[in-house]
Length: 137
Image 1: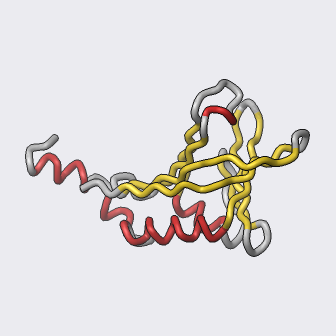
Image 2: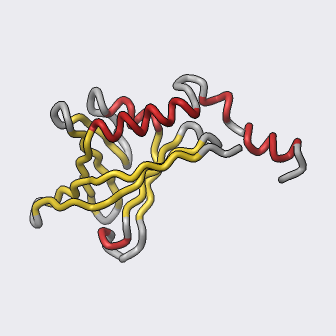
């Protein structure tokens, strides 16, 4: 039983030269990969015209709602009481998006229903083990 959670969100792509504009994105969480969250963006916002997927720690997303978090490719920070800013660092540059904090909180709450915070280790490899046990692997 692979529990997958997807939530469509509207983000504002923040660009200094072009201003900001709204784009769709999707937050993904799978119980089979309990430590990670993915965020997918449509091809029209990438430099090469390909869909863009970023993976990062669920804990990073949760921490970034309260205070600046992350030092690597993905950074998250609050932007006032109703907005959260995410920065995605790549060789080509930095993309910054702003989304509603309430949307992030709702997504995280759904992910915590699937895998409670602090119990992620219990779910690592469980899906594969069950598939092997029942001969589906």
